[in-house]
Image 1 (cartoon, helix red, strand yellow):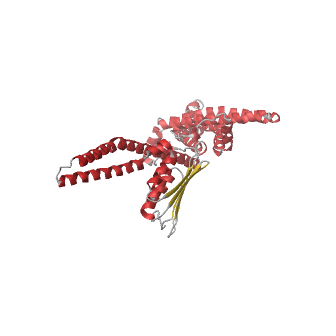
Image 2: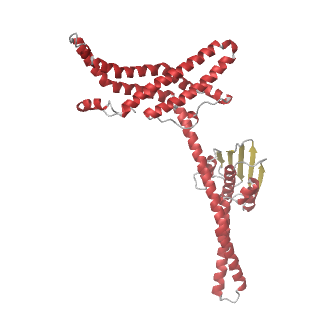
Length: 419
């Protein structure tokens, strides 16, 4: 409920709006918000003051202040949950999910993090303000609802002694206060709502941190889904189309070898079909291997890169220094970076030799692919280098390429692989 967002009321409709405000749901929700806030604020303020007194009185013992401080953090966290629930129930406030909405735990590290967090002190300041301010706001709203009608009855109370100007003035003031009571109540509730958004909610920095966390989780799930889809396609092609093409090529080979009495046109057709089937089978195997090689899954990055280097038309010197396997997505990115880089070397670099170095340093997997070709590789030139950079960034890695004209070309990538 945001009064500032309400459209202006034309003067002709003002009386009707003033009357309708008495039974509007937002008015009574605002009043309940203020009353429950007074009760919760008074209870929380009493507990906070008591813990502060205990902490100050127990300074010589050292232990009591520590216990009181921990208790204050726990009470502040519990009050935050309760106050947010109150704002949501009566005013429809929305709060972000995630770590900022969680209650306090007793873990020492969690308590230390709470002490150092500005969010903790914002929430604590709201509870201190609510300990006094919420009671005053509720008292003002309740006074407007009770004193106003009582003032309207002033002429009746003074009927026996004669009505004077004072009684009629009290009656007029009572009418004004009564008509203003719904708007006073809503205004006080909106003020408390604004204070709650500032102190109980998240700051812009915290909201951005939550957004980054959500985006990172979304990206990770997208990467995992894409990897799983590649595995499924690879498995379906390997077990389906590839097996059928193999059978077809074998049958055509048998027909080519055994049917020697066919006319020349028929023999040439079978021979051509046999050669085409073998070529398609070779291309399909390369496609399946490019989607997700089985050797990478079964034997790891070293064996998979050895197979890539062995198939390369350019001689490749390969060195892999890894004492353990890393995450599947990191292995897949490393494999595709090396595979695509060597494909570019064979197609575009006119190189005589290439070298691939893979090193695992702590929680970082480092790749270096170099060739002695003509250089001049441009990531914007459509050679797939931009795709390599995108693959590396998908796992928060770093990608660099150095390729002056005349060579050499060096591609480097660092992939985080913390377990």
